[in-house]
Amino acid sequence: MDAIQIYGGNCLKGEVKIQGSKNAVLPVLAAALLINGTCEIENCPIISDVHHMLRLLESLCCVITKKNHTLKINTQNLSCCDMPSDSVGVMRSSIMLLGALLARVGSVSMQYPGGCVIGERPIDLHLQALRKMGVVIEERDDGFLAQTNGLVGAIHKLPRVSVGATENIILAAVLAKGDTIIENAAKEPEICALCDFLSMAGAEIEGAGTDRILIHGVEKLHEVSYKVPADRIVAGTYLCACLCCGGEIFLNEAPYEQMEAVIDAASHMGADIEKSTDGIKVACLERRKALPELCTEIYPGFPTDLQSAFLTALTLAEGKSVIKEEIFENRFRIVPELRKMGAIISCDGHTAVVEGQKKLNGAILDANELRGGAALVLAGSAADGKTIVYNRHFIERGYEDICSDLRKLGVRCEVVD
Ligand code: EPZ
Image (cartoon, rainbow, N blue to C red; front, side, top):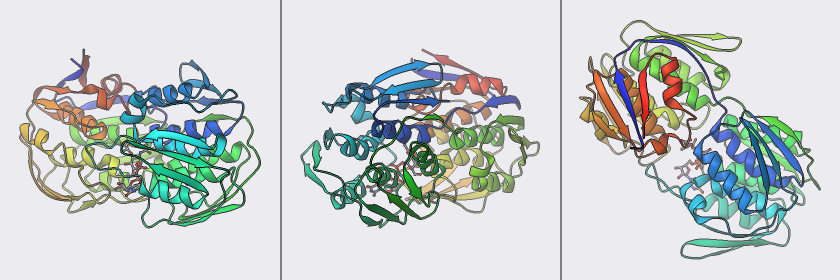
């Protein structure tokens, strides 16, 4: 049935280990293409987006071996052939391969990466930047052919902050001739993870995590072994499970220092949050309070990827909350589903107003994208009675096993095939 069934209402108690970060590992897998040899990637999350990325790498004649959460990627026989459109189409991160492949083989033909329901997801900033670095791009109806006789460094003043465009420019710049500067660069921890990986391989990068990044092109990179950091969005999702259901949980390996805005919002809702050496303790023993205003922003502001989870928690908070989605144009898709459960939410473009209720009722729900789907599972965990969330495959793009993780925290949920 491609679904998840939940019997909600339990107060949470338990501990869960946070998986490796999806949004850190995907650009790192693309970066492995820049190294003519074998790289080892540890703590790699076993999720369908990684599966699609590995299929793309194998279609480029990379040899990949997997052992639990550790991958070995050998790119010595890399040759650019056609990438399977079913993988390129379903996963936006395939665009991450563009910069790396151009640096390595000089020519890439691919279809436009998948958009999704949260927004149109254009790639104009990616293509604009690569054209400045010596790439000729011939756009066609369904895709494009990008070619270069050698990438050259350039100065990029990004008109808007873009995680993916920042990552793609870095991937194109590390082996380019000369220096590259990115102004108005994204500052997400995933940018730092990518730059850590590349620096370990011999790249020369300054300013990762700031809005100005300088890359000195080098001749070649060498093999590395790298451990993927914990996923701050998965950690925030389970922190929200506690906001929704109440109780006391421990998030093992949760990256506290990357979650300041999330922890601040949860604390204002009444959660007690404690940092410890190996994770985060969360306690929600009173009914949560509403948030007068919650705005999604670029990092280190409140992450858009946790907007749906907090929206869900706020449907049960005491009072009225206002949520503003400033990053994507269509990220309130779970509102009709939450209304089926009794939530009172009004939406107007980028703003949602929530009137907190004492309870939600179990219902039959449809997930239609990754983070919204996870939020619906949280809603079912807090609701009275039974909830079924269909289209589990969206959730499996970014969560290794959300049911098993939530069961460790005391939620009665199971996969229904
Ligand atoms: C990354 O997407 C993440 N994905 C997203 O997480 C995350 O929501 C997003 O950054 C913002 O933090 C990965 O890292 C794989 P952007 P990305 O380029 O790079 C516009 C999840 O759930 N834009 O920073 O695609 C764009 O439309 C996913 O894990 C352009 O206009 O995001 C958006 O409105 C969802 N032109 C804004 O910029 C471009 O060329 C931010 O997008 C590129 C982007």
